Length: 272
Image (cartoon, rainbow, N blue to C red; front, side, top):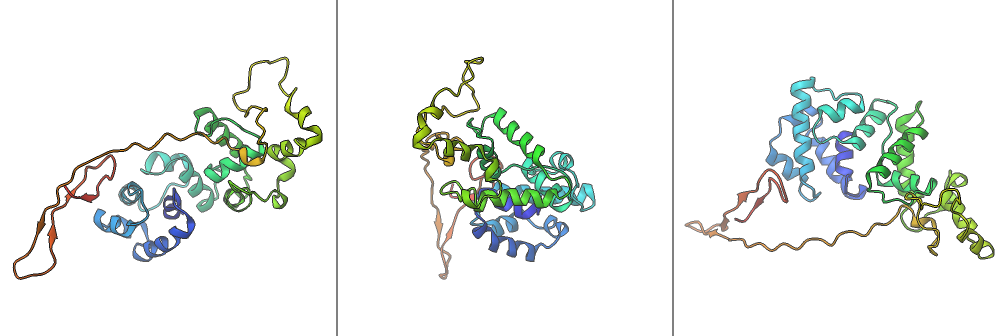
């Protein structure tokens, strides 16, 4: 669970599957991984991107072996506190799926499902909204089968409640979905009625959790709120390519240097 969840961060399942199979074949236990070198781990990770994930996995494995006898903590708090690279989501996944602990988890799929169920129109990256999603995930958690429930919730977002073209007709919780209820309300005969008069006159201040009701695009796909991303920063850099041709032939050799431990392309080899 630990390895697969780290690999699946920012990476699609179709890409991860082959990497995960090779990884567990080479390092089937945490003890095997802890004995690997950083170069071996980065080589195995090559192509998955976000290479800091691989470094944190290795560091975490070393910590688990040296300080915990090779056994991961069974609770989310212990996982987050004692194992580097494990955040709230990964801790919830490990605790609930591997240890059957009643711990919630929130990823992009869960955010989408909860945002539509509760018609949450706030910035999903805002601190208060993140806290709300975690609170809701804990409220609805099946404490008898938390691992199965969490995986089902993620699968619902991945297969039915998708970013575009969600299959609301197949959704098992559609009758509880406020976003879908809004769509049903916004039919032409009642559009004007639903468009106005929704604000509570006793509280004239606009709600920061709701998308303004005068938006004409009233499909469920307007949840969660799509926040404009900052334009990527362009950065120019000059490199020096030093080539050496060995005496007697053979392939050329190039001078490369190991990057710093932090920052962009950390711990990766590059031209000076």
